Length: 388
Ligand SMILES: *Cc1c(COP(=O)(O)O)cnc(C)c1O
Image (cartoon, rainbow, N blue to C red; front, side):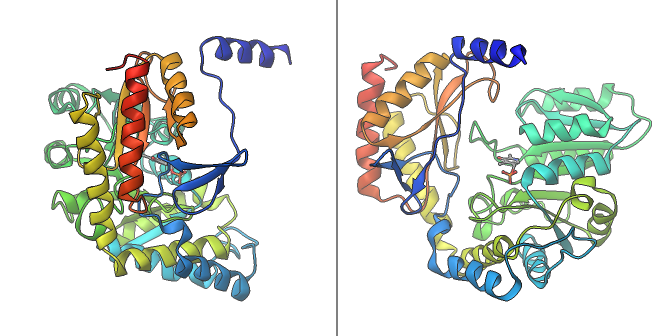
């Protein structure tokens, strides 16, 4: 087992060593760590719903009614009644005929992509797509063609030049998780129609953020009925856990019969499904949360940009501060921690070498005064390390 130690020494030397830290959430955005309280600027809990008492109660009720575990896979004995409520709710929210829930967003992507594409097919994938999409492509045995991030000329050229005897699939994140920018889905759909390709969008970071009532990228661009596969997660804005796909009846029934990550894994627990359904209801009852998170993000973005800090992304609550070297990103995270702020350093292999960054994520649960203080601290630290 020496290779494990050799590998670990190598990643340590490159400042890329990682380990999980135990966080105790006090509420949606405050965390206790080693006895001290911090403001988190690194949670995907965009609407702050994890600590809503209504949603917590939905999870408790689910346990009381149906127990703690599902006891089986969806197609055997694990489909408790809350699944039906959640899947119907998701289909209505996404304005599609049907929806199916997977155990995680990761499992949705690997299951869906490998179910839709195989030998002889071609998948066109944005260079910055999430790792679970990349893994789904590997699992599918289809030919994968990577187009430059958001580059429609490159995608058009590759669609034109790549021979394909089977099906074509174009897959993209709706909001890119590490960059916070929005895919040009309108142009992607137009190209997909020209080249008869299926279109799949991963809305993990778009739900609760883009479109009317936060229903996602397809609505943001007004592309209803023109995107075949809308994938998303229940683990970010929806404050629970699980992944889903929304689309036609035929697609959903096909996935239930074909996607191995759906078929061969035990169903989610009632509490998890109950919480997700509760969060979906809460989002639909409080569409103003979507406004709040976007306004909070805009406030931080403008304040940092005004101070000369290089913030990427647009119109989303993901604000990457480009730093470059992994070592500098790690140093800034440490200095910000001394200021009471939790920010994550995003380093390779999550992002390409030389593009390490601090990734701020803003929530509707953030208080403006605390955000103003956080901005001051980020500016001070950026000066100290001569980023600005
Ligand atoms: C988080 C994420 C996933 C995976 O979802 P999980 O529910 O966390 O497994 C997939 N795609 C994107 C773009 C993500 O950000």
